[in-house]
Image 1 (cartoon, rainbow, N blue to C red):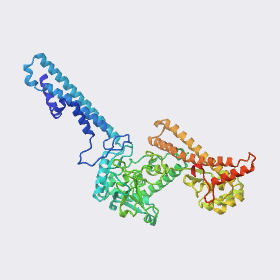
Image 2 (cartoon, one colour):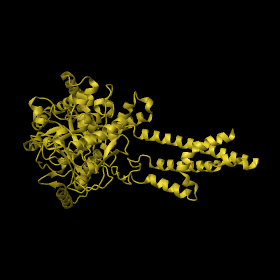
Image 3 (cartoon, rainbow, N blue to C red):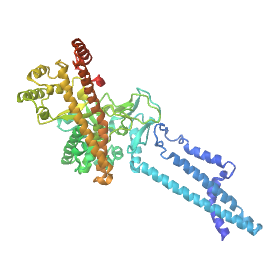
Image 4 (cartoon, rainbow, N blue to C red):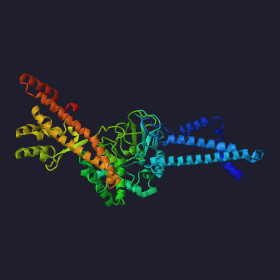
Length: 603
């Protein structure tokens, strides 16, 4: 019976043993090393080239998501081969020679063979378990891209190529090392500035000219969403069916996108410290409700979920052709909408000189090396705008150079200490410069835009700082700009008022951040759903990005006030020295063409 079992094991182990019999030679370790090195070698030449991801990323290359695990599996196979080879050698010839061996020798040999076979089986089981674990980890890493959609993305690339897209041979579609980014586009070769990275043909671009939307008095986003839904309902008969199949399905878009926020979300709680975020969130929710109703009432969308899916696709994947011109168009461009944005590391630009009928090119602005992810700038979007339009904050490649913050001013409170005549005169000047202004509405200022020369922040602070009709009449003929010289004492009053507004905005920001962090510290169980927790986390991160802009503007005001206090100090008793200090201060801070400078940090 033992002999039969050994023979049976021998037959089962023979294929693997014969295939790896060289491992039984004196070069086992060398062969195992070669096997590991072979696993790290590039793919065969008959496949698409797969460049290495730059060393700056801590994750494994996207086309080899578990490189270390692959090497470990090869080592495990080598160990299995050693055990199997040993078992095969010990059992080889037993059938023919066991009668000529002493009984005790035959028994030892059989026991050794059995032990080797058991060890081999245990090693195989361990290797299989490790392989299953590796496969599970890979699925977990790529769970944001379902397998069927991965196939759809590959079919999309081939479909775009077949229809005449150029430049795609120099690009690779691969898994991003950044969680949640899905499949992204990498460079398969080096690119130089001035080259055209790729061009998508006009035949597969879905577009809506703005003048057409204006002619029928409809928003271009609604019209483009209707076109997308018509193609979706055609199914396989649609000419752009491969593109529709590659898009995220309903429920796959980020739950933090405003189109998918729960009905019970409280904006006052989320954005208590971010006037900028509050304004964008309120506008997005209002426009989303209006657009969803338009798609449902027109019959383009079957239900609310489908309408929101179409609008999210247009919001997050739409391209603008020839912006700010008569021929401006909104379009969906297959394949190009898979290119991510980089707020600081982008090296491509989308600036088509013509309409969608001439195709959609992506131009190289800076050198791109093989293995780099292709990134281009979506536009001058602050973090709040990126969140509301695309569903992310964009913080993986550095601070946002287009960051924005905001604060509001309650006009009634600012005018509470003025006489009725002065109050009416100030309101008249505000209405004169802002026709839509109403006294019940707060004044809204965006940083850094409104703090620049010629914008509203500093002129309005001077207007509200006026203490008499005479001062106001001096400012009024200028329509708040160009600036009128009223002396440093008047400017100190205006800057003090502005500093008071900024301190209030910073206090609101800090209070809101503290409440959000306290809620997040209580854990997931504190929130009604994971979506609520994610929204609170995004709101806290938004405050972290906006606060430095408020601090910078406050420092500018404080720099001016400190310099003015030193220059206007007459306590020394030397009248000539006081005049010299005042003249030096005005020479440094006053510009005849631009007026008072904002501050040392903003000169």
